[in-house]
Length: 361
Image 1 (tube, rainbow, N blue to C red):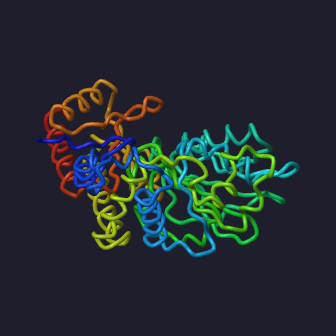
Image 2 (image 1 turned 120 degrees about the vertical axis):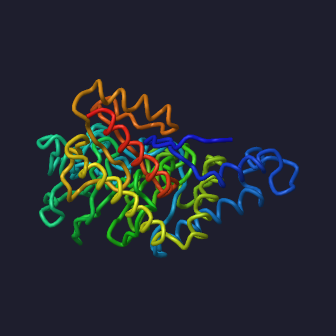
């Protein structure tokens, strides 16, 4: 079967080998006679998958022992609320950097729980830039500072992160987790939905310093408490079994490739090639993002008018290159080049872009 190249922002492309493994054992998992999605989540069969998934995350991301790794339902959107519910006590405030659509959503949810200080607002520059990491200064008495490492819609990404000791830094890494090496110790809490680089939609991961677990209010609903999930090793209730299984297979693939460093080199190559194709098009394609913060995961560009952009997307679909329409809130075009996309996939897109520009100048 000839499969199109999927540049969608999420749910996004999953390695074919992972899909084939899921299909091969969906009905009979490892000769148990049952599917993994119908066995007890407290039994040994699923328990092995659960533990191996957590171990792989810890190994691939070099997560120190003083952090807990949680596997939760609800996606990153639930974390927009869980975060302030757990870490923002009465009488304190939280700092947020508004870098784009997803940071804005996180801010709006946090405001339902307490006081939020927006210490940088990217709307002033149409979300085409980020502050210098050294310029980021937490507010006095901030309970935590929240950033979004990569914005899928606007196509901006932190290349370096702010550093400070006295305020916990929290990061939404949903769209670039496992795409590059990071120092987990730089953050007090990392969260990410799975459906970009980690596997099927339906599960999110939370990596949290154990000392922060004491902040979870005792009167908080049990499922909303980080402390409850950490104590139960993410088995307080039935976990999202299928996406965790898919994530385990994706993580095993990353390990076989040689780890995050190998994946990061390929991602750099993909992004460099695509941006060079845009910048060398003599203005036919135009990326609106400041070059210093261009995303390595979500490459956005415009053509001279919306009619031509619509034709580009239509012709690309016919050529087997799907998911290139920009988000409805901003228009334009967008290629999400997550880990599962190969250099050859990006070369195919660049070839199409070159041909399209030659035909439509």
